[in-house]
Length: 151
Image 1 (cartoon, one colour):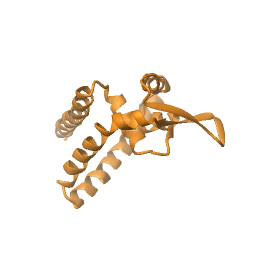
Image 2: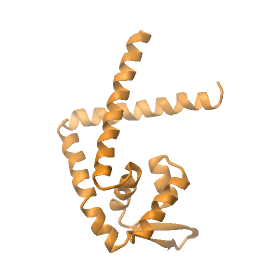
Image 3: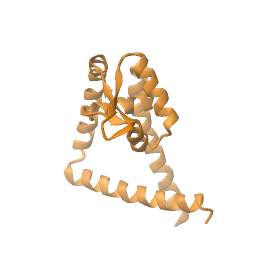
């Protein structure tokens, strides 16, 4: 049984790595890192803006990574920071017009490719994929937290 599980885990990991490579190729085609691509995607689908903390949580990356990315985008004139009325410590990251025009050539085609690829599974299989991936993610979080706790 353990051998079969290990083979399936390896097969899954190879598929996960291939998926990541698809995003990486897309990013490189636009002279971006994959994390920069993902930040553009988050901002594209958050026209009201989002905080750096929100981006960190969504991508599961540290603040330094997002600060570096937003710093590069700020220098290029793609984004600006807007104070949050309720919390002056947090600032919303939003596209400038230049940034929106830049991202428009990248994000909508990538999002459409994702949607088409997923739609080709059909609604039933897609729902099953989401459910299984959610269960796997929760199981992994639980099991890895045990390692971190030293149990």
